[in-house]
Length: 141
Image (tube, rainbow, N blue to C red; front, side, top):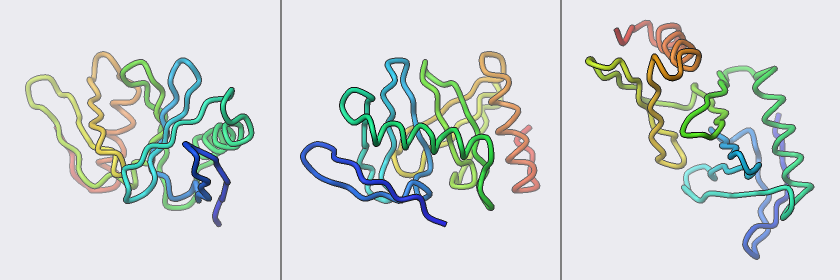
């Protein structure tokens, strides 16, 4: 099932299926960023600039993190003072640094590199490690 929304952003009007988005980023100032699939175009919305679209996106994020759809594995990760909701099922490569244990992966539509350290972000670290093992059958340790 799709979840279409209409957004006016930088003089253009977009109609976007949020189910095709692989990651959302929420900044402390309540700005939400997501990237259009295959385009690396970021869409930034804020409650003051686009209240209706902002509420729809935030409600969608809450919904997918609490009750994910079939085939998705949404996790909430605090990274670089921002909160990311990421569908790990859309990530195609993970790496682990042997000395520090840091896990790295790249968000597919933005090219943003996410680095998770086992000591500074243990909850996200264990979620990602669990996902990798469950999905691939491989352990990065």
